[in-house]
Amino acid sequence: MTDGSQVLILGGGLAGLSFAIALAIEEPTLDITLLEAHPFQSGTANPMDTRGSALNLHSVALLEKWGVWSSLGAHAGAIADIHVSHRGHFGSALMKAADLDVPALGYVIENHELGRELLKRAEQLGVTVRAPVRCIALQSDGDRPGVQTEEGEVLSADLVLLAAGVAKDWFHGLGIRVEERPTHNHALVFNATFPGQQAGCAFERFTPHGPLAVLPLRSLSRSEQRFNVVWSVPDKQVSVLSGLDDTAFIAAFQNAFGWRLGRVTAVGQRSQWPLVRLAASEQYRSGYLLVGNAAHTLHPVAGQGLNLSLREAGLLAPEVVTAQRNGQPIGHERSLTTYLQHAAEEQHFITRSTDLLATLFNRRGPALDVPRNLSLAMLDLLPAARARVAGMGTGRRGAR
Ligand SMILES: Cc1cc2nc3c(=O)[nH]c(=O)nc-3n(C[C@H](O)[C@H](O)[C@H](O)COP(=O)(O)OP(=O)(O)OC[C@H]3O[C@@H](n4cnc5c(N)ncnc54)[C@H](O)[C@@H]3O)c2cc1C
Image (cartoon, rainbow, N blue to C red):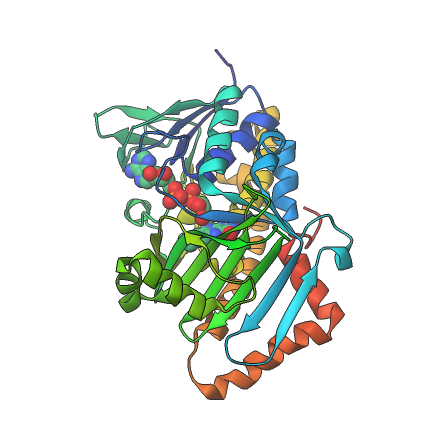
Protein backbone atom coordinates (compact mmCIF):
# COMPACT_ATOMS: atom_id res chain seq x y z
CA MET A 1 0.00 0.00 0.00
CA THR A 2 1.22 3.51 -0.78
CA ASP A 3 0.00 6.93 0.19
CA GLY A 4 1.36 8.67 -2.92
CA SER A 5 -0.46 10.06 -5.92
CA GLN A 6 -1.71 7.67 -8.58
CA VAL A 7 -0.34 7.45 -12.12
CA LEU A 8 -1.93 5.34 -14.83
CA ILE A 9 0.10 4.53 -17.93
CA LEU A 10 -1.72 3.35 -21.04
CA GLY A 11 0.69 1.34 -23.20
CA GLY A 12 3.58 -0.92 -22.21
CA GLY A 13 5.89 -0.27 -25.17
CA LEU A 14 9.45 0.92 -24.60
CA ALA A 15 8.23 4.46 -23.87
CA GLY A 16 5.46 3.52 -21.42
CA LEU A 17 7.78 1.21 -19.46
CA SER A 18 10.53 3.86 -19.38
CA PHE A 19 8.20 6.52 -17.99
CA ALA A 20 6.99 4.06 -15.35
CA ILE A 21 10.56 3.35 -14.24
CA ALA A 22 11.66 7.00 -14.26
CA LEU A 23 8.69 7.94 -12.06
CA ALA A 24 9.08 4.96 -9.71
CA ILE A 25 12.80 5.66 -9.22
CA GLU A 26 12.29 9.36 -8.56
CA GLU A 27 9.35 8.90 -6.16
CA PRO A 28 8.85 5.42 -4.67
CA THR A 29 5.57 6.45 -3.00
CA LEU A 30 3.83 6.97 -6.35
CA ASP A 31 1.18 4.35 -7.04
CA ILE A 32 1.82 3.44 -10.69
CA THR A 33 -0.30 1.10 -12.83
CA LEU A 34 0.57 0.26 -16.42
CA LEU A 35 -1.95 -1.30 -18.82
CA GLU A 36 -0.81 -3.12 -21.94
CA ALA A 37 -3.11 -4.60 -24.58
CA HIS A 38 -0.79 -7.49 -25.51
CA PRO A 39 0.57 -10.22 -23.25
CA PHE A 40 4.25 -9.83 -22.38
CA GLN A 41 5.04 -13.36 -23.55
CA SER A 42 8.77 -12.99 -24.02
CA GLY A 43 9.25 -9.88 -21.97
CA THR A 44 8.24 -7.43 -24.66
CA ALA A 45 4.86 -6.28 -25.87
CA ASN A 46 5.74 -7.43 -29.34
CA PRO A 47 7.98 -10.51 -29.47
CA MET A 48 8.05 -10.25 -33.28
CA ASP A 49 9.83 -6.90 -33.04
CA THR A 50 13.14 -7.51 -34.80
CA ARG A 51 14.18 -3.89 -34.35
CA GLY A 52 17.22 -2.69 -32.50
CA SER A 53 17.49 0.73 -30.90
CA ALA A 54 20.56 2.91 -31.27
CA LEU A 55 20.81 4.59 -27.88
CA ASN A 56 22.80 7.76 -27.39
CA LEU A 57 25.01 8.30 -24.35
CA HIS A 58 22.42 10.41 -22.57
CA SER A 59 19.93 7.53 -22.83
CA VAL A 60 22.52 5.09 -21.54
CA ALA A 61 23.22 7.39 -18.57
CA LEU A 62 19.48 7.46 -17.79
CA LEU A 63 19.22 3.67 -18.04
CA GLU A 64 22.20 3.44 -15.68
CA LYS A 65 20.48 5.77 -13.22
CA TRP A 66 17.30 3.70 -13.43
CA GLY A 67 19.22 0.48 -12.68
CA VAL A 68 18.53 -1.06 -16.10
CA TRP A 69 21.88 -0.75 -17.86
CA SER A 70 23.81 -3.04 -15.46
CA SER A 71 21.96 -6.07 -16.86
CA LEU A 72 21.36 -4.62 -20.34
CA GLY A 73 24.87 -3.43 -21.16
CA ALA A 74 26.15 -6.99 -21.67
CA HIS A 75 23.63 -7.41 -24.53
CA ALA A 76 24.53 -4.16 -26.31
CA GLY A 77 26.77 -3.53 -29.31
CA ALA A 78 29.05 -0.49 -28.93
CA ILE A 79 29.25 2.01 -31.81
CA ALA A 80 32.93 2.89 -32.18
CA ASP A 81 32.47 4.90 -35.37
CA ILE A 82 29.80 5.97 -37.83
CA HIS A 83 30.31 5.79 -41.55
CA VAL A 84 28.01 7.80 -43.79
CA SER A 85 27.95 7.27 -47.53
CA HIS A 86 25.85 7.75 -50.63
CA ARG A 87 25.58 4.83 -53.05
CA GLY A 88 27.36 5.45 -56.34
CA HIS A 89 28.77 8.87 -55.39
CA PHE A 90 31.73 10.34 -53.60
CA GLY A 91 31.36 11.69 -50.11
CA SER A 92 31.64 9.82 -46.84
CA ALA A 93 32.11 10.76 -43.25
CA LEU A 94 33.61 8.93 -40.38
CA MET A 95 32.82 9.96 -36.83
CA LYS A 96 34.96 8.23 -34.28
CA ALA A 97 34.33 7.80 -30.57
CA ALA A 98 38.07 8.28 -30.03
CA ASP A 99 37.95 11.77 -31.64
CA LEU A 100 35.28 12.83 -29.17
CA ASP A 101 37.02 11.19 -26.24
CA VAL A 102 34.08 8.93 -25.37
CA PRO A 103 34.13 5.11 -24.98
CA ALA A 104 31.45 4.75 -27.69
CA LEU A 105 29.26 7.04 -29.76
CA GLY A 106 26.26 5.03 -28.61
CA TYR A 107 25.04 1.48 -28.16
CA VAL A 108 22.68 -0.75 -30.13
CA ILE A 109 20.34 -2.99 -28.23
CA GLU A 110 17.74 -5.37 -29.61
CA ASN A 111 14.24 -4.18 -28.70
CA HIS A 112 13.18 -7.54 -27.24
CA GLU A 113 16.16 -7.42 -24.82
CA LEU A 114 15.43 -3.82 -23.90
CA GLY A 115 11.71 -4.55 -23.42
CA ARG A 116 12.44 -7.56 -21.23
CA GLU A 117 14.82 -5.64 -18.95
CA LEU A 118 12.53 -2.60 -18.70
CA LEU A 119 9.59 -4.82 -17.77
CA LYS A 120 11.65 -6.66 -15.13
CA ARG A 121 12.85 -3.39 -13.61
CA ALA A 122 9.37 -1.82 -13.60
CA GLU A 123 8.00 -4.82 -11.70
CA GLN A 124 10.95 -4.79 -9.27
CA LEU A 125 10.17 -1.14 -8.52
CA GLY A 126 6.59 -1.99 -7.60
CA VAL A 127 4.84 -0.82 -10.77
CA THR A 128 1.58 -2.76 -11.19
CA VAL A 129 1.80 -4.14 -14.72
CA ARG A 130 -1.47 -5.49 -16.11
CA ALA A 131 -1.44 -7.31 -19.44
CA PRO A 132 -3.31 -8.14 -21.54
CA VAL A 133 -5.71 -5.30 -20.76
CA ARG A 134 -7.04 -3.30 -23.70
CA CYS A 135 -8.45 0.17 -23.09
CA ILE A 136 -11.32 1.21 -25.28
CA ALA A 137 -12.09 4.74 -24.13
CA LEU A 138 -10.90 7.64 -22.07
CA GLN A 139 -13.27 8.21 -19.19
CA SER A 140 -12.89 10.84 -16.49
CA ASP A 141 -14.10 10.13 -13.02
CA GLY A 142 -15.20 13.56 -11.76
CA ASP A 143 -12.09 15.71 -12.09
CA ARG A 144 -9.70 12.74 -12.32
CA PRO A 145 -8.64 11.42 -15.72
CA GLY A 146 -9.21 7.75 -16.40
CA VAL A 147 -9.77 4.97 -18.92
CA GLN A 148 -12.28 2.26 -19.58
CA THR A 149 -11.08 -1.24 -20.39
CA GLU A 150 -12.60 -3.74 -22.81
CA GLU A 151 -13.98 -5.65 -19.79
CA GLY A 152 -15.86 -2.53 -18.68
CA GLU A 153 -13.56 -1.67 -15.78
CA VAL A 154 -13.03 2.07 -15.20
CA LEU A 155 -9.69 3.10 -13.75
CA SER A 156 -8.80 6.65 -12.80
CA ALA A 157 -5.68 8.35 -11.46
CA ASP A 158 -4.20 11.76 -10.70
CA LEU A 159 -2.24 11.66 -13.96
CA VAL A 160 -2.75 9.45 -17.03
CA LEU A 161 0.13 8.98 -19.46
CA LEU A 162 -1.03 8.02 -22.94
CA ALA A 163 1.83 5.88 -24.27
CA ALA A 164 -0.25 3.89 -26.75
CA GLY A 165 1.96 4.59 -29.78
CA VAL A 166 0.53 5.59 -33.13
CA ALA A 167 -3.08 5.38 -31.95
CA LYS A 168 -4.59 8.63 -33.15
CA ASP A 169 -8.14 7.72 -32.10
CA TRP A 170 -7.33 8.57 -28.51
CA PHE A 171 -6.57 12.15 -29.35
CA HIS A 172 -9.91 12.85 -31.04
CA GLY A 173 -11.64 12.27 -27.71
CA LEU A 174 -9.37 14.85 -26.12
CA GLY A 175 -9.78 17.37 -28.91
CA ILE A 176 -6.07 17.17 -29.74
CA ARG A 177 -5.17 17.60 -33.40
CA VAL A 178 -2.60 15.28 -34.96
CA GLU A 179 -0.51 16.29 -37.91
CA GLU A 180 0.26 13.18 -39.96
CA ARG A 181 2.75 13.17 -42.80
CA PRO A 182 2.97 9.88 -44.68
CA THR A 183 6.42 9.17 -46.12
CA HIS A 184 5.15 6.45 -48.52
CA ASN A 185 8.01 4.32 -47.24
CA HIS A 186 8.34 1.28 -45.05
CA ALA A 187 11.32 0.22 -42.98
CA LEU A 188 12.35 -3.37 -43.56
CA VAL A 189 14.15 -4.51 -40.41
CA PHE A 190 16.28 -7.63 -39.97
CA ASN A 191 19.56 -8.89 -38.58
CA ALA A 192 22.41 -9.81 -40.92
CA THR A 193 25.79 -11.41 -40.37
CA PHE A 194 29.12 -10.83 -42.10
CA PRO A 195 32.46 -12.64 -41.64
CA GLY A 196 35.11 -11.28 -39.27
CA GLN A 197 35.29 -9.78 -35.82
CA GLN A 198 32.87 -7.04 -34.75
CA ALA A 199 34.68 -3.69 -35.02
CA GLY A 200 31.70 -1.56 -33.93
CA CYS A 201 31.26 0.41 -37.14
CA ALA A 202 27.73 1.74 -37.84
CA PHE A 203 26.86 2.51 -41.44
CA GLU A 204 24.30 5.01 -42.69
CA ARG A 205 24.04 4.62 -46.44
CA PHE A 206 21.86 6.73 -48.69
CA THR A 207 20.56 4.74 -51.63
CA PRO A 208 18.24 5.88 -54.45
CA HIS A 209 15.38 4.15 -52.58
CA GLY A 210 16.04 5.74 -49.20
CA PRO A 211 18.38 5.48 -46.21
CA LEU A 212 19.84 2.15 -45.11
CA ALA A 213 21.25 1.85 -41.58
CA VAL A 214 23.47 -1.07 -40.61
CA LEU A 215 24.05 -1.04 -36.86
CA PRO A 216 26.52 -3.22 -34.91
CA LEU A 217 25.01 -5.73 -32.49
CA ARG A 218 26.75 -7.69 -29.75
CA SER A 219 28.79 -10.46 -31.34
CA LEU A 220 27.72 -14.04 -30.74
CA SER A 221 30.98 -15.48 -32.06
CA ARG A 222 34.49 -14.24 -32.82
CA SER A 223 34.27 -15.14 -36.48
CA GLU A 224 30.99 -13.43 -37.30
CA GLN A 225 29.75 -9.85 -37.04
CA ARG A 226 26.05 -9.32 -36.41
CA PHE A 227 24.23 -6.16 -37.50
CA ASN A 228 20.70 -4.82 -37.24
CA VAL A 229 19.57 -3.42 -40.58
CA VAL A 230 16.90 -0.74 -41.10
CA TRP A 231 16.24 -0.47 -44.81
CA SER A 232 13.80 2.26 -45.86
CA VAL A 233 12.10 1.33 -49.10
CA PRO A 234 9.09 2.73 -50.99
CA ASP A 235 5.76 1.12 -50.02
CA LYS A 236 5.49 -0.55 -53.43
CA GLN A 237 8.73 -2.45 -52.92
CA VAL A 238 8.38 -3.66 -49.39
CA SER A 239 6.22 -6.69 -50.10
CA VAL A 240 8.33 -7.65 -53.13
CA LEU A 241 11.51 -7.60 -51.03
CA SER A 242 9.84 -9.33 -48.07
CA GLY A 243 8.60 -12.10 -50.35
CA LEU A 244 12.07 -13.00 -51.70
CA ASP A 245 13.76 -16.17 -50.52
CA ASP A 246 16.91 -15.65 -48.42
CA THR A 247 19.33 -16.01 -51.36
CA ALA A 248 17.54 -13.46 -53.51
CA PHE A 249 17.00 -11.15 -50.56
CA ILE A 250 20.68 -11.27 -49.60
CA ALA A 251 21.61 -10.41 -53.19
CA ALA A 252 19.27 -7.38 -53.19
CA PHE A 253 20.53 -6.19 -49.82
CA GLN A 254 24.17 -6.68 -50.80
CA ASN A 255 23.56 -4.68 -53.96
CA ALA A 256 22.12 -1.78 -51.96
CA PHE A 257 24.66 -1.88 -49.14
CA GLY A 258 27.84 -2.76 -51.03
CA TRP A 259 30.84 -4.75 -49.91
CA ARG A 260 32.35 -2.73 -47.08
CA LEU A 261 31.81 -5.62 -44.66
CA GLY A 262 32.38 -8.40 -47.19
CA ARG A 263 29.81 -10.99 -48.21
CA VAL A 264 26.56 -11.30 -46.21
CA THR A 265 26.56 -14.77 -44.63
CA ALA A 266 22.97 -14.88 -43.34
CA VAL A 267 19.87 -12.80 -42.71
CA GLY A 268 17.25 -13.33 -40.00
CA GLN A 269 13.52 -12.80 -39.78
CA ARG A 270 12.31 -9.64 -41.57
CA SER A 271 9.70 -7.29 -40.13
CA GLN A 272 8.21 -4.23 -41.78
CA TRP A 273 7.22 -0.91 -40.23
CA PRO A 274 5.23 1.81 -42.02
CA LEU A 275 7.11 5.10 -41.75
CA VAL A 276 4.65 7.76 -40.70
CA ARG A 277 5.53 11.04 -39.11
CA LEU A 278 3.08 12.18 -36.47
CA ALA A 279 3.08 15.26 -34.30
CA ALA A 280 0.34 16.01 -31.78
CA SER A 281 -0.64 19.67 -31.63
CA GLU A 282 -0.82 19.51 -27.84
CA GLN A 283 0.63 17.08 -25.38
CA TYR A 284 -1.58 17.75 -22.40
CA ARG A 285 -5.32 17.95 -21.77
CA SER A 286 -7.19 17.67 -18.46
CA GLY A 287 -4.82 15.30 -16.66
CA TYR A 288 -3.89 13.27 -19.76
CA LEU A 289 -0.31 13.57 -21.03
CA LEU A 290 0.77 12.16 -24.39
CA VAL A 291 4.22 10.55 -24.34
CA GLY A 292 6.42 8.46 -26.66
CA ASN A 293 5.26 7.78 -30.20
CA ALA A 294 1.79 9.00 -29.25
CA ALA A 295 3.26 12.50 -28.87
CA HIS A 296 5.82 12.37 -31.66
CA THR A 297 6.50 9.66 -34.21
CA LEU A 298 9.72 10.37 -36.09
CA HIS A 299 11.39 8.97 -39.18
CA PRO A 300 13.97 6.45 -37.93
CA VAL A 301 16.72 7.93 -40.16
CA ALA A 302 18.51 9.49 -37.20
CA GLY A 303 17.45 6.89 -34.60
CA GLN A 304 16.04 9.54 -32.25
CA GLY A 305 12.45 8.49 -31.37
CA LEU A 306 13.16 6.40 -28.30
CA ASN A 307 16.11 8.56 -27.27
CA LEU A 308 13.75 11.53 -27.17
CA SER A 309 11.20 9.61 -25.12
CA LEU A 310 13.82 8.52 -22.59
CA ARG A 311 14.99 12.11 -22.27
CA GLU A 312 11.39 13.22 -21.68
CA ALA A 313 10.88 10.51 -19.05
CA GLY A 314 13.97 11.87 -17.29
CA LEU A 315 12.48 15.39 -17.46
CA LEU A 316 8.98 14.50 -16.28
CA ALA A 317 9.86 12.51 -13.17
CA PRO A 318 11.38 15.37 -11.10
CA GLU A 319 8.47 17.68 -11.99
CA VAL A 320 5.94 15.15 -10.74
CA VAL A 321 7.93 14.65 -7.55
CA THR A 322 8.17 18.38 -6.89
CA ALA A 323 4.43 18.74 -7.34
CA GLN A 324 3.65 15.82 -5.03
CA ARG A 325 6.06 17.04 -2.34
CA ASN A 326 4.56 20.54 -2.49
CA GLY A 327 1.09 19.09 -2.08
CA GLN A 328 0.02 20.12 -5.60
CA PRO A 329 -2.08 17.88 -7.86
CA ILE A 330 0.46 16.06 -10.07
CA GLY A 331 -1.89 15.92 -13.04
CA HIS A 332 -2.66 19.62 -13.07
CA GLU A 333 -1.29 21.64 -16.00
CA ARG A 334 0.36 24.10 -13.57
CA SER A 335 2.42 21.27 -12.07
CA LEU A 336 3.63 20.20 -15.52
CA THR A 337 4.46 23.63 -17.01
CA THR A 338 8.23 23.24 -16.80
CA TYR A 339 8.08 19.73 -18.25
CA LEU A 340 5.87 20.83 -21.12
CA GLN A 341 8.23 23.71 -21.93
CA HIS A 342 11.39 21.61 -21.85
CA ALA A 343 9.79 18.73 -23.75
CA ALA A 344 8.60 21.14 -26.45
CA GLU A 345 12.15 22.51 -26.87
CA GLU A 346 13.63 19.01 -27.13
CA GLN A 347 10.95 17.89 -29.57
CA HIS A 348 11.35 20.96 -31.74
CA PHE A 349 15.09 20.49 -32.08
CA ILE A 350 15.04 16.71 -32.69
CA THR A 351 11.99 16.76 -34.98
CA ARG A 352 13.41 19.54 -37.13
CA SER A 353 16.83 17.87 -37.52
CA THR A 354 15.30 14.45 -38.24
CA ASP A 355 12.82 15.86 -40.77
CA LEU A 356 15.59 17.75 -42.54
CA LEU A 357 17.74 14.64 -42.83
CA ALA A 358 14.82 12.47 -43.97
CA THR A 359 13.68 15.02 -46.57
CA LEU A 360 17.17 15.62 -47.90
CA PHE A 361 17.92 11.97 -48.42
CA ASN A 362 14.52 10.88 -49.62
CA ARG A 363 14.49 13.20 -52.62
CA ARG A 364 15.26 11.66 -55.95
CA GLY A 365 17.07 13.10 -58.95
CA PRO A 366 20.66 13.86 -59.93
CA ALA A 367 20.28 17.62 -59.43
CA LEU A 368 20.04 17.00 -55.72
CA ASP A 369 23.18 14.90 -55.58
CA VAL A 370 25.46 17.93 -55.42
CA PRO A 371 24.22 19.33 -52.10
CA ARG A 372 23.92 15.80 -50.74
CA ASN A 373 27.46 14.96 -51.68
CA LEU A 374 28.64 18.29 -50.41
CA SER A 375 26.98 17.86 -47.06
CA LEU A 376 28.47 14.39 -46.66
CA ALA A 377 31.89 15.56 -47.76
CA MET A 378 31.64 18.52 -45.40
CA LEU A 379 31.19 16.19 -42.50
CA ASP A 380 34.58 14.75 -43.32
CA LEU A 381 36.18 18.12 -43.92
CA LEU A 382 34.92 20.09 -40.98
CA PRO A 383 35.78 18.60 -37.62
CA ALA A 384 33.57 21.17 -35.85
CA ALA A 385 30.51 20.24 -37.91
CA ARG A 386 31.25 16.58 -37.36
CA ALA A 387 31.52 17.09 -33.63
CA ARG A 388 28.15 18.88 -33.64
CA VAL A 389 26.45 16.06 -35.48
CA ALA A 390 28.06 13.52 -33.19
CA GLY A 391 27.06 15.62 -30.20
CA MET A 392 23.46 15.33 -31.33
CA GLY A 393 23.90 11.62 -31.98
CA THR A 394 25.48 11.05 -28.61
CA GLY A 395 22.84 13.16 -26.89
CA ARG A 396 25.39 15.62 -25.51
CA ARG A 397 23.38 18.70 -26.45
CA GLY A 398 22.63 20.64 -23.30
CA ALA A 399 23.02 19.48 -19.77
CA ARG A 400 19.49 18.40 -18.93
C1 LIG B 1 12.25 0.92 -37.99
C2 LIG B 1 12.41 1.74 -36.75
C3 LIG B 1 13.66 1.88 -36.17
C4 LIG B 1 13.83 2.68 -35.05
N1 LIG B 1 15.08 2.83 -34.51
C5 LIG B 1 15.25 3.66 -33.46
C6 LIG B 1 16.56 3.87 -32.91
O1 LIG B 1 17.55 3.32 -33.38
N2 LIG B 1 16.68 4.71 -31.84
C7 LIG B 1 15.60 5.35 -31.29
O2 LIG B 1 15.77 6.13 -30.34
N3 LIG B 1 14.35 5.15 -31.78
C8 LIG B 1 14.15 4.32 -32.82
N4 LIG B 1 12.88 4.11 -33.32
C9 LIG B 1 11.71 4.67 -32.59
C10 LIG B 1 11.31 3.77 -31.42
O3 LIG B 1 11.19 2.44 -31.84
C11 LIG B 1 10.01 4.22 -30.73
O4 LIG B 1 10.12 5.58 -30.44
C12 LIG B 1 9.81 3.40 -29.46
O5 LIG B 1 9.59 2.07 -29.77
C13 LIG B 1 8.74 3.94 -28.53
O6 LIG B 1 7.48 3.51 -28.92
P1 LIG B 1 6.22 3.69 -27.94
O7 LIG B 1 6.41 2.88 -26.70
O8 LIG B 1 5.91 5.12 -27.80
O9 LIG B 1 5.08 3.08 -28.85
P2 LIG B 1 4.77 1.55 -29.21
O10 LIG B 1 6.00 0.76 -29.37
O11 LIG B 1 3.83 1.59 -30.35
O12 LIG B 1 4.04 1.02 -27.92
C14 LIG B 1 2.70 1.34 -27.65
C15 LIG B 1 2.12 0.24 -26.77
O13 LIG B 1 0.80 0.59 -26.40
C16 LIG B 1 -0.02 -0.55 -26.48
N5 LIG B 1 -1.39 -0.12 -26.73
C17 LIG B 1 -1.87 0.48 -27.86
N6 LIG B 1 -3.19 0.69 -27.75
C18 LIG B 1 -3.54 0.21 -26.54
C19 LIG B 1 -4.80 0.11 -25.86
N7 LIG B 1 -5.91 0.55 -26.42
N8 LIG B 1 -4.82 -0.43 -24.63
C20 LIG B 1 -3.68 -0.89 -24.04
N9 LIG B 1 -2.48 -0.84 -24.64
C21 LIG B 1 -2.41 -0.30 -25.88
C22 LIG B 1 0.56 -1.34 -27.66
O14 LIG B 1 0.21 -2.70 -27.60
C23 LIG B 1 2.04 -1.10 -27.50
O15 LIG B 1 2.68 -2.08 -26.74
C24 LIG B 1 12.70 3.33 -34.46
C25 LIG B 1 11.42 3.18 -35.04
C26 LIG B 1 11.28 2.40 -36.19
C27 LIG B 1 9.91 2.28 -36.80
